[in-house]
Length: 149
Image (cartoon, rainbow, N blue to C red; front, side, top):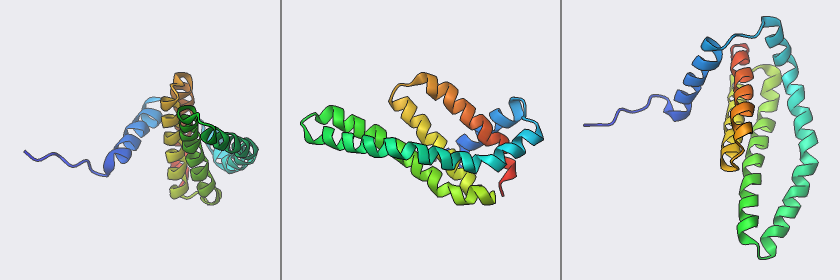
């Protein structure tokens, strides 16, 4: 018996399931609040990227030091966690121009960034951030999804 192919892939199926939860089941934000979020979220991303850049550069320097001094296990794990964080930041930076133009591709990049950070929180066993942080991120992302074309 042939396996049934998942239409659109696993990530698309996850997106549809999350949309059911965060748009159809949970209460909706007022339209004015959504409009404010869509208007100011690109600027919030700019501030977040600028504020995180110095700590990222400092940490990368420290992480490089950990690789070089025989602490392979700690340095390797430390580097993997920061690599995941860097991927999320790159996704946000690439999404930024499209967020100002309200493009769906940028919304998807922010969605992927939130998924990457969920993986980060899972890998670091940070269950509070995984459940609460990811839940809040996804709620706001799916509430404003209809504003992006």
